[in-house]
Image 1 (tube, rainbow, N blue to C red):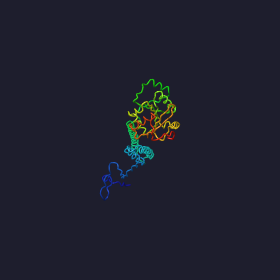
Image 2: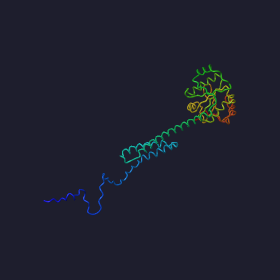
Image 3: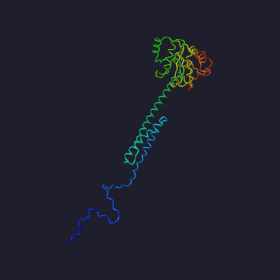
Image 4: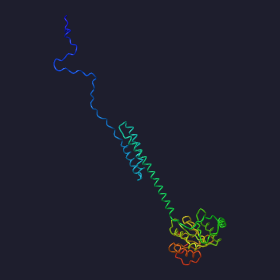
Length: 309
């Protein structure tokens, strides 16, 4: 059988050219690059609402610490920030704002700390101002105050060891329930006054009593001191001996009152501060001088002896 192969001179080893049209371009030598369409950007997760509220409250707590808002706003900022931390961790990337929550916790802590610091500053200022006013206030009584006497023996020991008092000064004794009943203390003072040739005069006073303070201030004046020579002056607070004063007929509706005490420790006569006009030494001295010497006859107010205070 005759072969159909072309003769060797007519054989074409390359690609067969197309019959019509241009020759196609050769294929690229490298790998074909894949064409990738434009991908949409992945949206960022929104911040957690609690984180936003936390940082806002934290900022306000720091700014408003001087207006007493540090603690009321700082504590919620801390709590919201801590809760936002948990919610963000549990959201699996669906919530953001971890840094905002942390900032809210830090700012809330700072605001709360500043609140207590400001509270301490104000407290110290108030205490210091109160102390300064107390020190600057005039004393309620300018006369000397002796220690309470426990009994007659103690009084005798004091009389023998202490120097004789100057006639130009008045020693004021204040009686208190801690040293015994009022009746016992008055009896002790009456005995001591009788032995010393003195007259026992008792003044009833009360706390926050303006006339009492005025009389106490006037008692240090030379005119009053002269009027109270050889007088043992005793003060009794009506609030400390209210019931006993009623039993001793020394309970009056006002203070101060002045009582002469006999040797048995009971009142024998009494006058009030209404016996003079203003509580000035020039008004007080002549009335008290006549009263302690038994020569005060005219009275503006009579002693009722027993009324409820």
